[in-house]
Length: 413
Image (cartoon, rainbow, N blue to C red; front, top):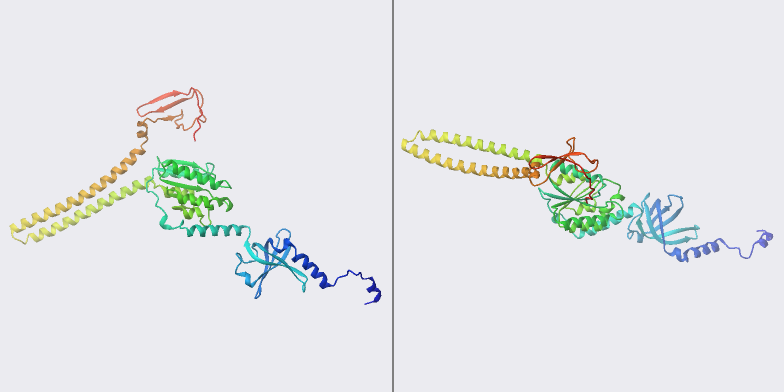
């Protein structure tokens, strides 16, 4: 090098090694960088026998940082790096003088974004499963003919309307208790728990429907909340869930005694269809008559055979054996017919009692009345009514016409 140029160099000039070591000291001795948490998306990955080398990238700014997980640490990671997935890593900054590059040495990695939620879901599910909350042995059968049903959902949700419509269509006259709850957002878990406890304190319901319409994963997060799961598990009333989602079952579904994929399907499972019960009864009556007819025909055929055999015996023996055979067959026939008729009569009486309980005229005889407007429509609310309007009231015996003199607003809870 020219001596004139050497004279121009300042005394503080550093060699490449000196500068690199200075930067290395700044990075590796910095307290903030000795343990740093970094969130990013894995943009590339290169497995190597000494470890796994990958790059974390910020999806918005495209900034990148090189990372390495040494072989001895890979098995300890909660989440392995996968290209395209978001990670939360913790490690320290190291600088390599030979390449003049810094690198993040990763000690641990966790799933980021939705992956973190999935991890928490799996951990909670495994813990609750280990406690036996999802065991089939602890699930109870739903009552076959419940007279009172409770529903927990949002009063504004379409699920509530779907359940009411389904229950009215399948089993009119059923008593339905509504316990409103918030079914979305941070307040939803506590609200659902309170609604379930409210039904249990009331004590009238024989089965409870917990329902919500469809929605995004985050909107249905309340049904994976531990508080809701334990409230379902501890409830003394059988619970069926009807959460409208097309993904894996929620934890609420797994702990419930039964579950359906929609609120309507849950309502259909809870009560039988009255028309179906009547049709099934008619089929049983027809089947019973068919069995009796076939048995009678078989007895008649058997008697004819005995008669032919008796004709070949002496007259006294024929009469004696014929009388014994007839008496025996008559006794068997009476026993079979009596038992069949008793069974059919008891079943008919049970259905008759149920039909009488649903008879609107029977309701009127108990002191209730049906209020109809001028056009014949049944009045269920004061909304739309006018002062001076004529109404027709049907009583248990007879009808009366009245005129509206005053409309009182009532707050129906």
